[in-house]
Image (cartoon, rainbow, N blue to C red):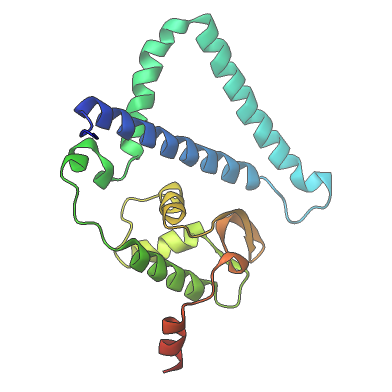
Length: 196
């Protein structure tokens, strides 16, 4: 017989989900920063030298943090609460533990998926794809996804089973996005609406 989760279990689930989002957001930011080091005006190794230097800086920072914590493990007393606080702040407001107790009426996921797919097709147009940053900016300009970042949108698209690629090249820039080849064909109802 299934029982309702306790407050501690709900809190642990919320914290775990927040940590996943935080790690994804940090990873996306780090990879975007590394990719920004690529020079389009150069060829060969010279073009990616900036990326290599930026990756080395991040690795050196991670190694330095590891050495620091190994030398002074008491720093974890400050680092762990800060990490948990950052993970909770990463969550969209509707995913806090208080909201889990009284969940709002959820909109139809299939309708949301179709709306997102339709918007994505429109933004792609005749290009190979659309970057998530562009899609997020469009949503925010129309009063949706307020306070979201690219990682939040990526998590939402993944939940709605909209395919996301790590690297989509649009107008010479490569970033996380949705590629035209990954989109399912429009439903017959949408095609009939477009024809009318």
